[in-house]
Length: 105
Image (spheres, rainbow, N blue to C red):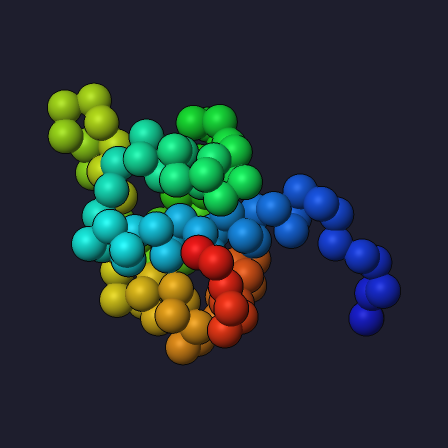
């Protein structure tokens, strides 16, 4: 069944957040901690709490787009090859925005 329901704002923001995290990781040498991700997301106008960022990271991890590990108490996130493909727009995953050619992040 086809729905003509418009996406709610929170869904659109989540799609942008997912893409932004992948592209931030790529720009950061494929790895960053969640505090860095939070700071850069805020600069892109996608301010998020640590809980929301970690929720996003967990969804990306479940999709095989990132891996995670802890260094002491710091969550470190690493981009996978599949995650890089999404970040570059080579393929798509439901729930993550496909980057346009003029994507700012």
